[in-house]
Length: 184
Image (tube, rainbow, N blue to C red; front, side, top):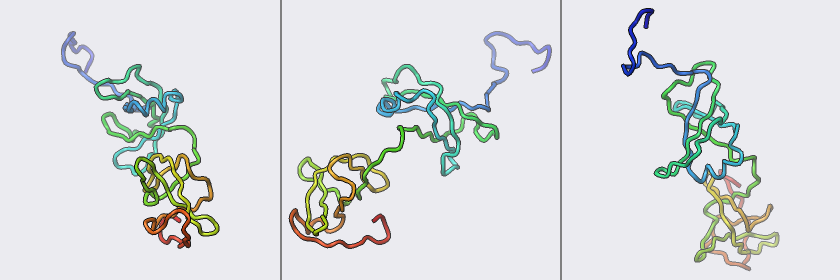
């Protein structure tokens, strides 16, 4: 575009202006995530990574949350402002975004193989100091790298039987074998 160029209303766009520092990253979250996130969404810090980045090295701040959930998709639109001094982020790129779900939470993790089912109840076998097997009904949470969060039913220090569960029953005696090569 030069001085003296003719511009008419309704014609083709002559140029597009895009902000590159800071960069806006638009993303959607499902309804359940939004409901968990809504109480601390304003100015929350998010982690962002591009397709060729194994980690999420960029950080941004949520500055916009749409006022309605899309009823067709069940999602809500959010926007984060991300500093981009090196120009690594460019308009049109796809990115992964991680929302915080609050602070760190202490959780008990049990190998998925240890969790058994009886009708509609989940349970694990534990071993006390005398080597006696006991059954504990548990409430399970989400899965994290092959382990399951135990929301209720165990206490710190409980020794959960992972292997050979088909050979034990409450009140029977068992011995401890130390796990090798994986999680203890």
